[in-house]
Structures are given as C-alpha cells and as structure tokens.
Length: 98
Image (tube, rainbow, N blue to C red; front, side, top):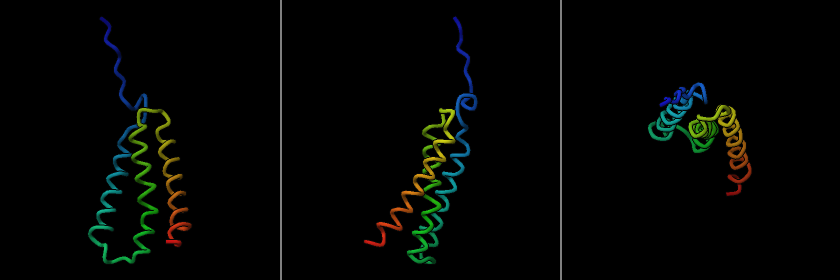
C-alpha cells in the first residue's frame, strides 16, 4: 500500500501563526480599552478605537478561515480593507444621524 505524502500547511497554504498573533493582540487591546480603562476615554475616543480593532479582527478571522488557500493573506488583507471602509461609512454616514 502506498502511503500518501503528507505536506505541512506551509507548503499548501499560509501559516496560521500571524493570524493568531493579530487576534490575540486585538483581544488583549479590546479587554484593556473597553474593560479596564473604559472610564478614562470619551465615547468618541472609544468609537475611534474600533477603526483599529475591527479591520485587525477581520484580517485574523478571514486569514484563519482561508489559511489552507495559497491566497489566504490576500483574502485577509482585502477583508481588513473592506471592513475598514464599511466601518468608516457607518461611523461617518449613519452614526451622526442616530
């Protein structure tokens, strides 16, 4: 019987380590800003922090979902850019109307 050759994920996709690092950083930063030092910032400052967290979160989640693909990094970067654009549109277009 032939044993199929097993290839590590690096040869067929992207390593998940950068995505886990970004996700860990986002979780730590969100806990710090929104959990520990929440009272030190105005509502506007807290909303502006999401411009950093949401694209980084989208980058890491999409990267982890598509890590088996050779274009995983491309998909992750595109999702971060698109989520940033949508977040900007929401906060600058819809948020002031509420």
